[in-house]
Image (cartoon, rainbow over all chains, first blue to last red; front, side):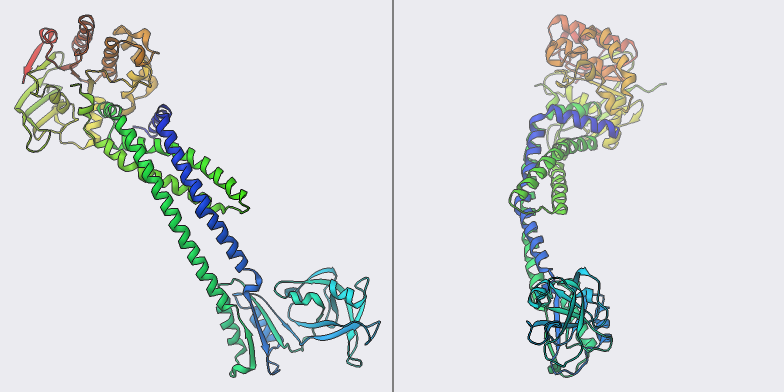
Length: 366
Length: 215
C-alpha cells in the first residue's frame, strides 16, 4: 500500500468516523488545555520567578577594601571585569560631598563618587557626552539639589580648599544594581586612582558563587579581615532549589495529564476498532497487511489529535493571557507535540489488537 | 503439466490447541476454468477451508499451494500481497464499505495491490455493467438490494483478475432469482479462466458446480 494511499484512506476513514475522530480531538484538546492551564501557568510563573531572580540585584557582588590597603587598582578591576562569568565590574572611591562650584561651600551637598573602570558599566548617559578624567556627570536628583537648571557648570568638594572644581559635561541615570548613584554625581577617575569598593555583576545568578570565588582569588588577600564581601551565592542556591522544585512539579503535572488523556484516547480507539471489526476484516481479506492497518488506524487518530492539539493550544494560550501571564512558546509547542505522541502511543495497542484479530469471525455469518 | 492455481496438501486445521481438528489431511486441487463447490454438514469446516486456502488462517499441518508455490508459511506481508493479487473473496453478506460508492467499493482492492486507481476505474465500470449493476455505480451500498450488493462484491473480487475466486455462501441470503444471477456471474468468471471455489450447502449451487469437494 502506497504512503499517499494510506494517508488518503486514513483521512477518508477519519471523515467517515466523525464521532471517534471528534472524541480523540476533544481529548487531545483537553490534554493541551489542562496542561496549559496547570503546568503551563506554572511554567510561566517559573519563568517570571527566574527572570526576577536573574535581575542584576541577585547577581551583585560587592567587595570593600576594609583597611584601605589600596589593592583595588585599575588593573585588578580590569582583570575581574575580564572574567568569563562577569557581566561588568566597576570600582568606586570613597564617596565625598560636593557642592555647586558657583555657590561654594555653603551650597547644598550631594554625594559624589569617583568611578574607576568603564563608566558605562555604572551609569547610562542621558544628555551631554562621556566625561574625560576629572569631569563629572550629574543625576536629575543631584541637579535639583545643586540648583542647576541645566547640566552646565561645575561641582567642587564641599570642604573648602580640597582641590579644583569638576566640570559637569552631562547627565546620567544609574544602571541596576548601582541605583544609589542616582542621588549624586559621578566623576571619571584618572588612571592612577585606587578604588575603595569594587562592584561586580555576574552574568547569571547561577554563576554568582563561581564569580565570588574567582574575584576573591584575583584579590588574593591572605587576611580575610582585609575585605568586606557581600555575595549573592546563597540567593543563587535558593534560586536553583526553587526552580528545581517548580520544574519537578511541572513535569509531574504534565505526565499525569498526558497519561490520563492517553488512557482515554486508548479507550476511545479500542471502542472504535471493536465497532469496526467488519471493516478491518474486509480490508484484511482484500489484501491489507497488518502494518498498513496499524498505520492507518494511528494516522486516523493523529488527524483527530492534530485538530485537537491546534484547538487546545489556541484555547490554552488565550486562557493564560487572560490570567495576566505570558505563555512560554517552547512549553506550549512541546505540550502539543507530547499530546500527539501520547495519542500515537495510546492508539498503537488497540490498533495492533485490531490488526491481529481473527477476520473470519467477523466476516462469516452464522 | 501446469500447477493448479489453488491446491491443498495433507491439510489439517484447528481453531486453537486441543480443539477439534478439521479436514483430516485433505488433498485437493482446484483447477482453473471450473467452479468447485465445497460442501459438508455444519461444522465440517466449509467456510474455514476457504479462509485457510485464502491465507487468512494458518493450518496446523499440511500446505496451501498458490500456482504451485507454498503460500501458507509466508510472512503476513507476503500472504497479504497474495490475497491482494492472486485471490478474490466473495462473502455471504457482500461486506461492502457503507461509506464508499459502489464503484469505489469495487476499486478498493487496488489500494492493497498497488494498482493504479485510474486504470481500474474503467475496468470496474465494465465489470459492474457485465453484472447488471452498472447503473448503480454512484450509489452507496445501503441504496442497493442484497442481490445487487453480492454482484458488486463479485465485481470487486474480479477487479484485479486474480486466478482464484473464493466465495463463502455467496447465495446464502438471496432469493432464487438473485441466486441465479450470482451463480451466472461466478460461472462466467470460471469460463473466463478463473478458479472459482464456493463453500455452500445450497443444492442449487451444488447442482450447477463443475466439481464438488465433500468434507
